[in-house]
Length: 148
Image (tube, rainbow, N blue to C red; front, side):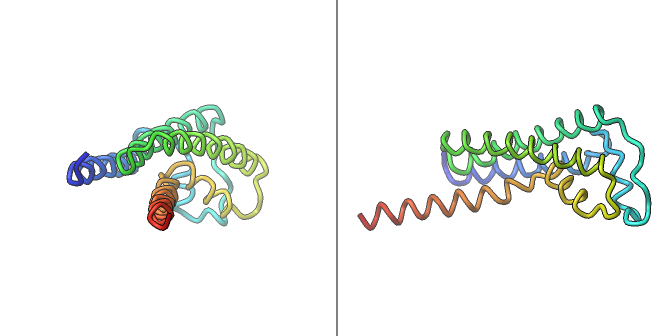
């Protein structure tokens, strides 16, 4: 794939991520949006439907993950990296959603940790971690091959 085609496709996919973010309040149920925008340190957690919350949390995470996986694939054209990334996204979702559930049920006095766990679940943060990591790995492999 030529460089300009990659840039165009990745740009389109980034715009898709931006649209998911922009229309997230309309597309996905999340009673915590207003809660975390306001004075959440002094207010109680709003009421929420656990199944509904986690269903829409999964939908949003899956949407962001699929677009992020497409970005990684277009950037590197490496199926091995995609398989690793899929496993990474699945494990991250399971672990983070369990932690998020426990934090919501515990109703601790401060909700900062809850806020950041939620952020990892609803925003495409992992692509910002995986892209440079894979790029760095690719450069190391190239340097290793050149020195042999």
